[in-house]
Image 1 (cartoon, rainbow, N blue to C red):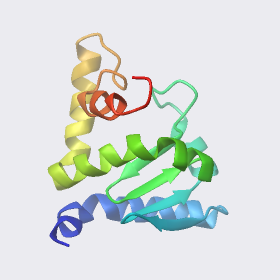
Image 2 (image 1 turned 120 degrees about the vertical axis):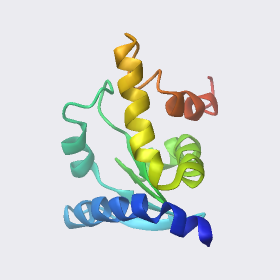
Image 3 (image 1 turned 90 degrees about the horizontal axis):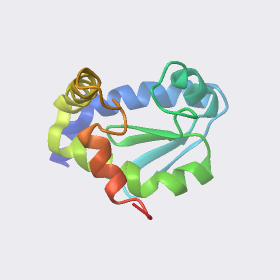
Length: 129
């Protein structure tokens, strides 16, 4: 239970995203201690300007994962659970650390998303990687 408190500032951001997604017709359910929410309209809005080709399929915010659809949540579950574990390690410092890592990669001429060490760790568990 302590880990939920440690991650709660980021999860609070996730709950705001959840509220927006639900107001736009999304749905949510608990899966293995993580609130999974469908929010295609929210993610389309969030994807504008994102450095991810094709937009954001899912995003983890603490113990909340918002995905395009139930199918997307199932497809990205392993990847997104790595991010949940990262939040559990880093707590309220995860979001700033992630953003700084992206900025550092971009400053070094690398891809701010794919070369971000947090994403490298998450993609390492994906099938076929």
